[in-house]
Amino acid sequence: MKTIEIPLKQITPAPFQPRKEFPTKGLQELADSMKAQGQLQPVVVRPKDGAYQLIAGERRLRAAQMLGWKEIRAEVREMEDREAMEKSAVENFHRANLTSIEGEDIVFDLWAAWGPNGTGDYKIMRDLSREIALDEGEVSHRISAKSARHKLGFGVGAPHAEDVSTYDLKSTAGVEDRSIRRSMLAAKVGGKIGSRELPDYAKAVKDAPKPLAEAVVKRPDRFTPQVTEKIKEIKSSEHQAAVIKEIEKHPIEPKDAEALAQSAVDYEDHETEILAAKAEMEQKFQKLLEMDAQSRAEFREKMKTPEMQKVGKAFGNIMAHTDFERGIEMEGCCCPQCGSGPEKMGWMCCGLGVRDAIKGADKRHREIMAENRKKREEAKAHGN
Image 1 (cartoon, helix red, strand yellow):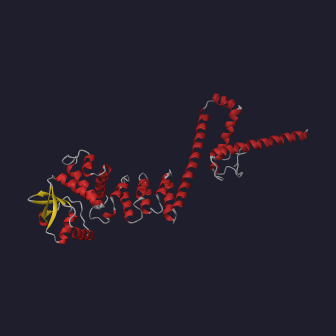
Image 2 (cartoon, helix red, strand yellow):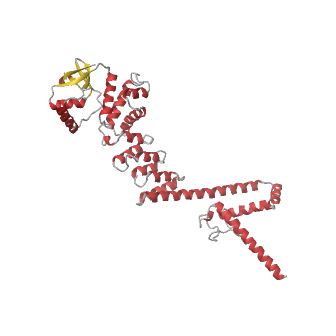
Image 3 (tube, one colour):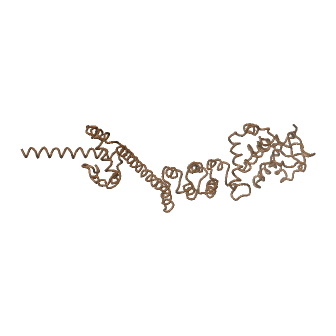
């Protein structure tokens, strides 16, 4: 390894240079510095076809050309293509501000040329990571991002390609629907979703039904990650569609949208509780119908016991309060809060659940029975 002065015209740029753009302002500042202080660090070249190929230091070479220098100080090294490419990658990763696309290209090209599908020099990504001093996870992300970028339409030359970073592609990697992922990235480019918010949005739509995911990327200001997660708790697709429609139709704050979704969740929970109670009662009725005459007789005797009478009373109350059988009239069967009869399932008048309804009805029933007993005793005493 030696350092010599080499004529600029004998140095050619490397074909694997990851940097595609060299802003004029930055080059001019470097040229001014080199003019004032000289060349502080040599460029790195390798012998190639009777001349020299640049490995590292293209900005310094271009600045020297701007200054009109004839020669530049260079460190000459013998190296193969892979080593030259790795050296160029390290130089650019740690000394220059690469764009996302440039950073993805250099890692992808190294892996493609010398990975398992190339020469096989890199057996696993860790081998490449070690050679270019880049975290293994970052190597994986850049390779994946390169592939995804082109599939999603944000490759080199595409509109707004540079506005979609490697981080953005990494953040949305879990969104399998390509159209949803593309729309989400477009929303980020358009300023509707911040880069820091993107992972939360991607997580929210990852397993969301497509109508909901489409609503999110269309109006992320209303369908925030918190709102989306709450809507996903709604079990019925019809109920989900109704909530989505309401949020899309009216100007609504995220907190109000979340409250709307929560009301649908609460309604379904209450409905599920009622239906479960009905199913249990229907199952018990079916068993009763299947009993033979002797069994029914034995059952009637068993029902005379205090314990089973209590069960039967609770059974009657739940039938009445879920409107399982219309026309049932049962003493004490009314809402313990407002006194209303079982006009709607589950005492919807006060929003009581079935368990509270049964408990309240039993309490009220005991009170009425006690009052009737007292009246009979008073009447009997008066008659005497």
